[in-house]
Each structure stands twice: as C-alpha cells, then as structure tokens.
Image (cartoon, rainbow, N blue to C red; front, side):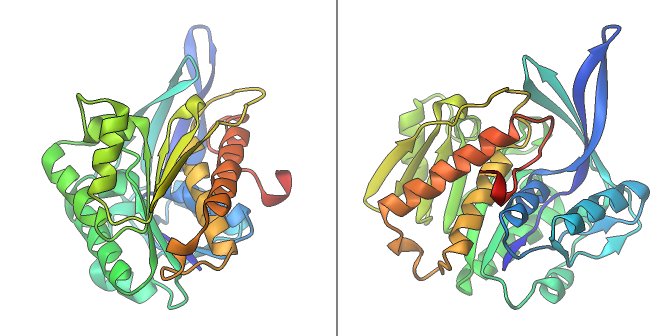
Length: 308
C-alpha cells in the first residue's frame, strides 16, 4: 500500500476573469493530497493519514479522496480547513496560503503510529507540510523511522518560498530526510532555491552527492525531466499538452504516477536499486504523459489509468 502524509486544503484556483476581476473555483488540493489522488487513479491501494477538518470544506476533501478509492485513515478534527489562493499569470500559478492552526497541522507522534497501516510499502510526504512547526518535525521523524524499517520513502520538497521564515532550519530538515529517502523528486525551482547562484547542472550534482536516494528526479517543466540512479543518468522529454490550460498539480501528478508504477511492479526497498534503465525510462515517460494530461484541465486533475 502507498501511504501519503502532508497537507490537504482547498485551492481557490483562478479559472477566468470577468470585468477585470479574477474568477476562482474551489478545488480540494494540497501537494501531498494530490499525490494520493494521482496514485489512486492509477489503480493503486492508497491511504491518507493527515487529519481532515469536519467543516464543510473538510467534507469536500474527504469525499473526493473516497470517490477515487483512497482509504481515509486520517482522523476528522474540529479545526478549520487550510486554504490556498492560486492566481494565474500567463497560465503559471502563484500561491497564497492560509494554514495557521488548521486541521491538517494537528498531528501527534502517537496518532501517526496508530493510523499508519501495517501493510505500508511506500511512504510519501513533502511540500508545505515540511516547512515549519511541530507538525513538520513529526513528519520528518516519521519519514526517517519508516526509512529505517525498510519502507520505500518518497520525498518531494515542492518548495513554496513565500511560506519559509527560517530557510536554514527548513533546508536542514530536508537534508536530514534526504539521508533516509529512496526516491527524491525536485523541480528546477526547488533546486534553484536549495542551491542558489550555481548552474542547474552543478546544483543537481551537489544534491545527488548529499542524498541517499536511489532514484533522483529533476523536473524541468517543458524541458522534461532528468533522472539519476546509481551509475546511470538520462533525460526524458516533456509530453505535449493540447491544450495547455494551466500547470497546477503537474508535479504532484508526475510524483503520484511514479509511485503508482513502482508499486504496480511490486518493487521493494531492497529491490529498488535493481530497476533497469529501460524500466525507469518507461516509468518517467508515463509520469510525463500523466502530468501533461493534468495540464489540459483547470487545477489539479490527474488522469485515470485507462486515459493513457
């Protein structure tokens, strides 16, 4: 089973403009939440373990998970749902977040231990859940613990710079977690934030030297993806979007598809290093295709397995 932790929220995504004012649609989201949806739509057994509010917006979040077959192991709590406002400029998203004292941050070590299923094979976490606060520390601890227990661990920082108040503390947390990661995915924007003022090639090389991950993926938007695994590396071209509506959730769809493919092939932490280059190329190509299909609709809307 793929187990996903990390934020859930309501995205107010700009879909048009009328009378020079933006028009927004409320869409359940959050990077980690989106990854869970993407993997489940690929026919995988997925569970979600972050608390969800019992307010009306939380009901929307839980209902969408259940509609796509995600098992909601997360408790329902009284605190309100987190919000994000996603505005578009030339079809590229910019974000504002409202998540102080909200439901998805109300985690404890005991809760995580009690609700994490024994059948876990892959654990994924990332994005704004790791930025600051006690909840970020707890996610980091759980990630490292599961890595030590032989679970495949997947990390996607999906950095939102505007939320980071203490950059060094945040980067230190990501560095600790990367020592226990089996799969590490970064965007070119993540890399520029983590290793600034050097070329993309040099920054990628530095990250690769400082992580224990067997599979390291760098996504570069329309330039495709770069992958390093053991003694080999390769690049995969981006798939074409027709039409391109927006890029919201493209990286999450990519990540969820990678995890789905690995789980589908019954890969374990012990056998992950045995994946051949051809097998990994096929996985990344499928992830690129899924991301492109997602970009053909508004907001994060990962494709189902039968759609590609």
